[in-house]
Image (tube, rainbow, N blue to C red; front, side, top):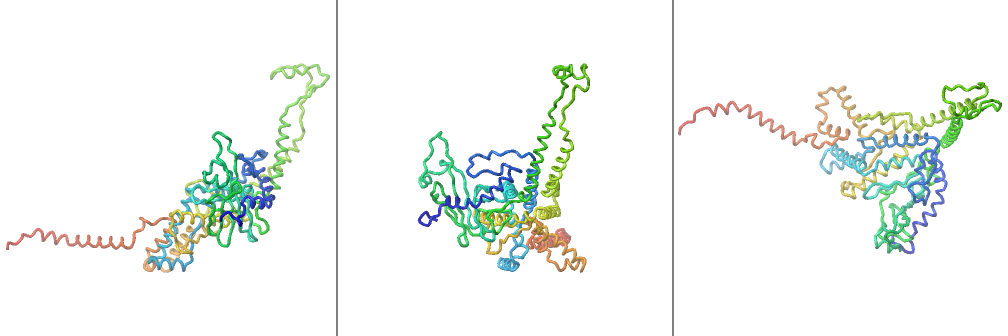
Length: 514
């Protein structure tokens, strides 16, 4: 996209769309103030974080962190792929036929691709970025996840990007804002955007770098702008399903461009809890203050009381001195019980007190499945929404990134078709493994082990077991050629053993003379 008469300024689009974001940022600030204030930063704030007050209660932070951790654990379970490459049966059959291999070998190859994608996720600092993204989704209801062609991802909060969606909630245009300095640009770029290199030792003034991403027909077009000028060489395009920028709104609405977040649904209870904890704290501080009332007609002076040591005898009537109390014990009890009840309800909703995934090296699939179901039941589909609106585009983007880096080969269209398998859906290949085991056991019970061994293709069954168990069969399962060679060697050795006596007898007989 060249800068000319049809050029649309990224900064102007950002300012235009920014007015539609006011309600979303207001909600985000209100929710962040009661949970994790560090998540909210005012637009244009150059500091690492805005100055924000500390909440009077920690329930908001505990609820957000608990739901974030559980969501991350369920969406990205350790040592398992949260998706499955599930091409159509006809596509797999045709691919196996064209390659001259069995279907199990095709599934094994797809499992290798899945492991490559999962390894990229674990080694490219995706998990910490996803953790931060989920926090923004819960509190602010919006985040933008950027996966570049190289390097770690970046998370944009709601105050650092704008988004326009269609009636179905799909993004049509996005504009992000990054803060840089002039010396971060090379000389040619500074000249093009009309900036000067700062003097050595001078203060580096921050500069806004705007990136505009707009959907044009079936592809995303993007370019960057600094100081009102397009950065040379920053324009590019991506296929519709491979956009590096993933804008997520929680929940998706057909009338708004931004989501409200899960925390906002319970903002009333959190606000009430904040007020009650604040009142309890002030009351406790007042109750902790010790005051004495001395009868004006008492012969004892204040100094005698204050300087008297413990156990000392003071000549006075007991009624001359009394302790000033607030007499608010019953009121405090009611306020405390109300605050505890609200806190308990909120922690149950956000799963603070529920620990499904135990600590250990091995966590069963049933535990993960139950965890995902509990999330869907308590959070009204928040987990399922993230699985479809965030995880699926992320997997597609990682596939495109690995192919661009040459770490994945190019496959025919329709082969690398990811299907999310976390949440209430089946747990990917673990579900297939259970089905295979159940089929074999049922077959043995129906026709007997001998008939099953005669009918089933052992090599194909082992290949499917390895693919379903997410285990690489390379070097583990011997091929038909290796078995045939071993069988030939065994037959040769047995023949030599049988012929050994005859050969020995022949060798012991005297040789005839010619």
